[in-house]
Amino acid sequence: LPPAEKTALQQASVIGHVFWDEALQRIAPAAPAALDSLTRDMSLEWCHRGIRVNGAAPGGILTEGKFQVTESPFFTAEQMDQIMARALSRPLGRMGYADDLATVVVFLASPAARFMTGQMVLVDGGFYLA
Image (tube, rainbow, N blue to C red; front, side):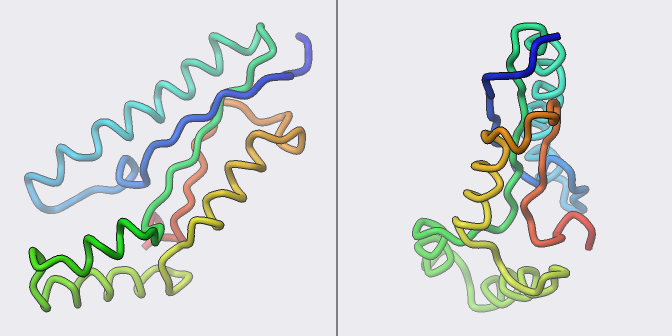
């Protein structure tokens, strides 16, 4: 097989790898889990064309939009406390930054990842582990 010269990147969510206790939240992981599976399937389909397919699944990345949501009047003070407690309970003890995700995506698109395909890299500060 020729070395992979092209890269296709998917973005899912760490939520596709997590079990939720709440009934309504059990539906949410379906789409990210499907993207994870699609990433593996596409990597097998496209590898003979020299295309690697990988993805990144962020979890808890702080963005300007996330600040707007967490400061929304739709969340009670108790809910905000729960959100922050869950963020700080990650093994790395913090939320992620856009650069944390960006460096992984740049790596996956680079020649340094030339022997990787069909992988969904979790960028979640250990959220999946906890």
